[in-house]
Amino acid sequence: MHEFGRECADDTQWNGPKQYEDKSTKSLMMLPTDMALIEDKAFRKHVERYAKDDKVFFKEFSDVIMKLLELGVPFQSKEEDRMSLAPLEQ
Image 1: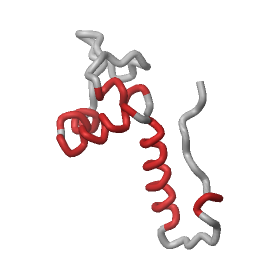
Image 2: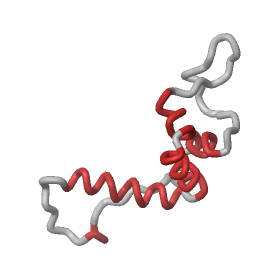
Image 3: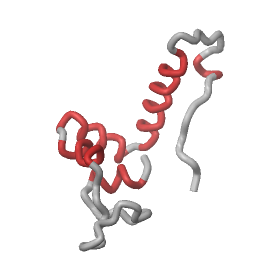
Image 4: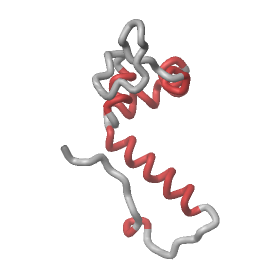
């Protein structure tokens, strides 16, 4: 999973870009959507699950994106021949 998701899951400080930095405390502010991911029990379980295994995140994300792309557009290719999404190797 991306680093921010991992940081949200274990409530540690984000070390990435400071584009939403609180001017008075210099800490990273979380957007309402970020807060919903960790405060809502239904969302939090997914944040924790994806933080533990980014392969699960990318597999499920890839499946959902393909489903969205295919709505109304029937593909003739086999599932194993389709595009898949995965994290970049570092």
